Length: 167
Image (cartoon, rainbow, N blue to C red):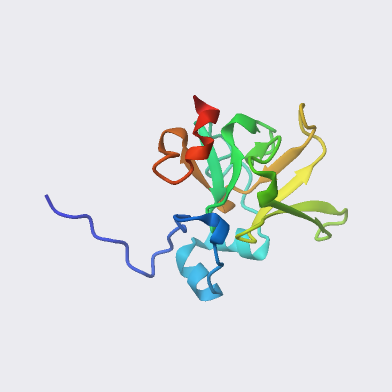
């Protein structure tokens, strides 16, 4: 049995988010560029937007949580995910509200509410007031800013506190 070779350092790799995200320190720009794919870097670091209906999680229905691809901090749960018809993953509320930071974004004609992660300072997407009950909110996120942790792997990846959501 031969070992699988590790990826070359120049291959973009998502940050695993291992360790305690509460003590996360954001890497330097050049390190982030090496750790993230081009689209992950553009979205999280330069407020980019990935194409609708052509991203990893817009039509993803497995049970688990979504964490910041940069810091690993828990952001959203599949229990709050719904099909908004927009082509991006949408949620009615954050899993850990304290991990979400909002600010007004004036990049388009009308102001929007930008959503960022607290520890990773990653651009995640925007929140709108046209979502379903119970909150009436639509957290419209970019898949490129997220990493999915399946419910069956929560404990082994350090997210055991969220396992009861899926029991």
